[in-house]
Image 1 (tube, rainbow, N blue to C red):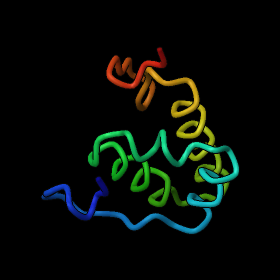
Image 2 (cartoon, rainbow, N blue to C red):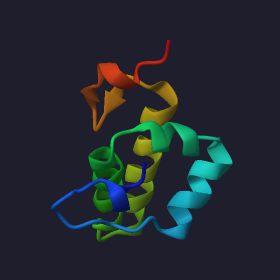
Image 3 (cartoon, rainbow, N blue to C red):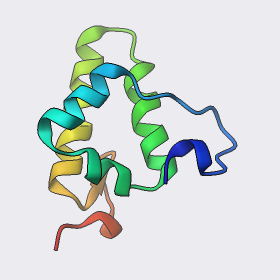
Length: 84
């Protein structure tokens, strides 16, 4: 289920190519897609709204690390995504 079909009422952010590439390179696209639509959208919006390139890169790394670890979302515990 993608963000487009989720029924989100807030602004929806399209996935930039650099985020897609990073997810593909780390093999995390499926982990990303398993997250709820609001989390997908929040991650993308949080990354693209950064003004400095260094901040975008830092936020992207955090998202990738959280998807890889599981059990965390934006530095908060997220039991639904814990790796079994």
